[in-house]
Image 1: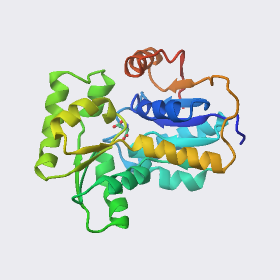
Image 2 (image 1 turned 90 degrees about the horizontal axis):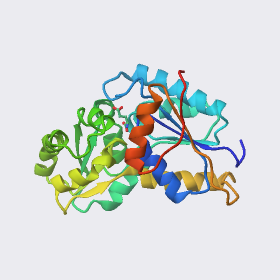
Image 3 (image 1 turned 180 degrees about the vertical axis):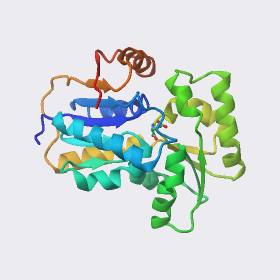
Length: 266
Ligand code: DGL
């Protein structure tokens, strides 16, 4: 491992781009290798065993690309696979749950935190457990939002269908009186406008990507692995499904072309 290696990120699809764009912003000298497991999206309804199998292959692929650090740009795998894989590989890695919780705990004033996430993440109880480790008095209101990932993957971020789904999932959280909402799936920040409209100005949205990338930056620096040099880094994108569709969606979401997307079946 040396500082010229890239940072590896992975997700089921385009969701992890909400994390990679934060890496680009906070660590502009770092090269990224991104893997979108688009042949298997959505992850949210899959079993823990199946998810671990996918994540293991992806981490092994990224390790083979000589990445120096891995960010699980997927809450579902941060919840279910990271605890197993972090001891299986000699690579430093980080997930979204702990940093997201730390930020939510600093943010809440009334002790009522909402979490929207995939079914698998909600079922794992990962967010709730992590919150309770730090503060048992916090009330946690978790809600699975299974329709949102397929809608975002289809490029729907501002249609009546997605607005209806957002309202349906979030209105119970609004009624519960939460003042902080964790966006517990990396696809959801693309819907942040609709979500904050639905929740109103008194509810703070937490996108765990920012605190996660800050945490990653600290660790990479501590390990002496920060990229040196001024040259613009080259980012590489791999998918298990159709490269063209991913490239189009990525361009739409990031507002720039990500260049060639390579199909890598693992
Ligand atoms: N974006 C991922 C997450 O953060 C996976 C969503 C899915 O594929 O269901 O959980």
